[in-house]
Image: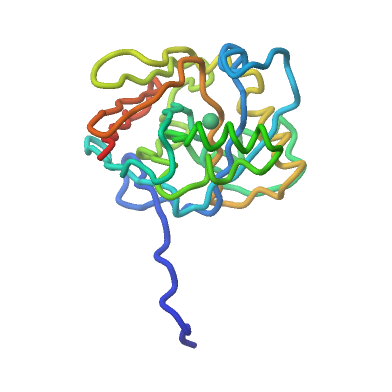
Length: 231
Ligand code: MN
């Protein structure tokens, strides 16, 4: 069999400690999953988790120790960083209970849910989908995946991002409103999770703008840091 057009290249992420790579299937993101970030976005209280998606080829894969580059995207004047812990699903399933979630996790990575905040805000105001603000090209930088057994206690890990060497966001994964296991329970009730799915679990407070020339260094304790420059 041959294809009528060239099939798109598979997207994959390096895995710490091996030459093998993790193939990316779908990219799920959790909205407003840290209380202080929910507040800065004008919301309070523990609402049920909600989700949006980015295309797999929105991933900008950055090797350990390397500096990735993203273009300053079109249409926006307010490009925001959101540092996030990313969960990589190794075993699929639907209606996964939180108590069983761990065995579906392959590993963890540091990711950025880059956001055209002005466009997202306009869509929110109009009650329209967020895609143009969230799911645009190169909107999902990600560092290497660390297998779960080697990642330490990610549920209680510091999470941070610095821009040009200065702190912008610094919190702890323990402050997630819906923790990793609960997120998997909710997500797998709505979609059957598949191997290769990534879950960007949400960002803490301190989201802010970056401009061309800025360098972002993001981390979650126990995982390789993620360095991305805005071209
Ligand atoms: Mn986010």
